[in-house]
Image 1 (cartoon, rainbow, N blue to C red):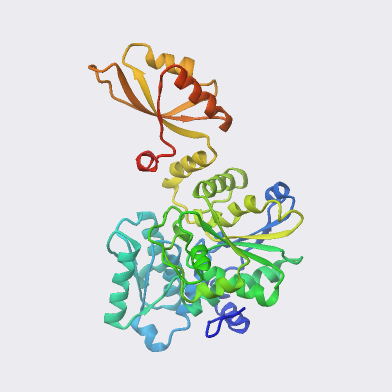
Image 2 (cartoon, rainbow, N blue to C red; image 1 turned 90 degrees about the horizontal axis):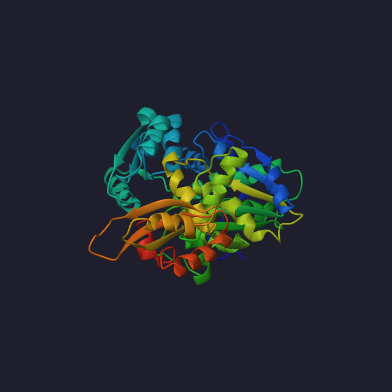
Length: 420
């Protein structure tokens, strides 16, 4: 039920947005996935927003907002704070509309992302690196807006941005040949979810819209549970395109009213999906872009025989993160384990560990040890990769039987953070 005084985008305004962005935003494919369709015994379609020129859907909202500015606002210029997809959408929009823009980014932003923004914005964009976090960059951007009467382009909590993102919903309904039972969609600040869910609520009310958040940043799920927009004290930032402490004040009531449910997915599961898509489908996605597909496992029973759409929201993945993605995927699959191993300080102890303790398919992937000659035993931090999760308990039993077992580190986050 729609709450009093709550903004809900109209289909009329969303169609206007679709006309506005049609020259700059691609009508991305709604592609059948044979592999996922077979796996889940359903018709699974992928809405490929990763194929946009800026490699995410963010161009839709950014262009719709910036193109709506008055002549005076355009002359004053625009400002945004972002280290990711929103910055690229704003940069390209500024170049196409010939409007000067300033993009604030945290100082540690990878150079690859800075170069992408420069490429899309060319001479129309100035990049300023400020502070260590997004919040630092955001506060600096707001000061510039106040000082020079510039317009802040919000990544999600803006009516024109929401209406721009909502155009994805119109495209899906036009492209689909059968009624859609489920749409899975990533939630960060909620702009995409708010816009798309409004379209389906009006034009396809029987479709269930499932919002998907990373387990370490469940800001929409917590807010809906608390019945008020709630800021989280701490978030896990790995799924950077969907990790926000607080969702939008505009987007929250829309999502609360329109979404069937909000599901949280472990970051390790997201990493599994990223690697599967790359290795089996030759599709490159960023962590946020994998969220919607990662949710399918948790709905396997419900979606059998159904028509399902997953919005693949973006593909701006930094290749330098590959090692971490693989590590998190192995940990989630219970195939990577870290131990403190106590070695007798004598010749042959390591050989005994390798021959008698490790299974035939176990592999040492991390080993850190310093010999201390005045002690009987020395401790090493050892990382072991298994072929099957069932091999863990026998491995621990052998370690204990031969007095090599010191401690198990996977469930000790205060120590584990130094390894992963």
